[in-house]
Length: 456
Image 1 (tube, one colour):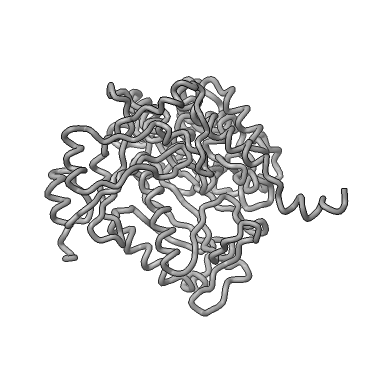
Image 2 (cartoon, rainbow, N blue to C red; image 1 turned 45 degrees about the vertical axis):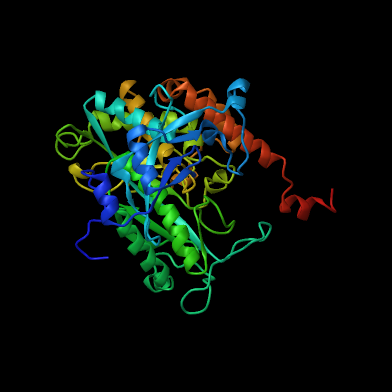
């Protein structure tokens, strides 16, 4: 492909862009409540036609699929049996090349009722609604995700523990190598492919480091608009899995894939600016603004009540335990990674808060929406933040739910957030997550067979 061809869609002429890049088919994505990409693949002529006749449909049950692939049902039995269609509307600025697949493009779509009302169980609409609340106040949210993941050896047996893949030196990592450049080079072919594919897809990647787990990596995204970045996080996950598989290994974004290793997070850096791009988090001199303090107060009050947005799976709670390389608290402090809420070093223009609680398994739209709505409520309710924590915050008493069951109970009862995010989303999300929890609780684990079988 010539270097002078623009691989990102500028939005001026869809047909010309598709023709320039010889696109034959387009994958249309609708992210579900788990962040799984569902949708359809269309021949390019059919895709262009759908932009005119708006006849691109998907069954509404796409938002009721549990993580194991089965339907979770619906609160309304008649609705479940009818399974009416929803209209898929391509968000054309997200149109991009499908790396490694010549002639194919990707596009994210929004879901609507046939009367053009937004389908509010859609995570993209949930995040967009929160961003609209900010716009109504003359604010603009700016975010930057940091996403951790493991490279693992292929393992078709779910009863066997995961292991590190073989690197370029012919050996798997057996000990931790945090920030080790030589260890990072072991996966150079996979990383090169991933960076090349990310560039083709227009992903705003920043730095890549080797994290503390064996074959655990972290990628940082450049800061930007939350909705666009949430799309990019899901696209990155797809590309990372493809690049890893092409290198004879797998990439996993489970929160706690290996019991003896660190968990994988999705840290979210957040700031709020006014319509002119000026920070609202810094006060006079180098101090914090009152809004920033209230924003942190909102995070401290509401994060424990809406943890399923940051820890959406039973596995998520294996990561959020004291002394397991992840915060288990909602303390805040400057440059202290043992706190759930960290204020990174930097001048007033870079004043931000880092929410360190979301796992890599979190749906990025919902983790961002949850973080922003908690901060928003803090400002609306003028909540005070706690005193700054110093020293080892891992020793602080945790107010976070310890299990998915407790987290869902508290989530269901969080009326201020429920009112803002909407009943359609809450009921759908609670339905899917309750079914997943019930399915998990019906499984007899290898630990039970190992320790109980011949002893109780």
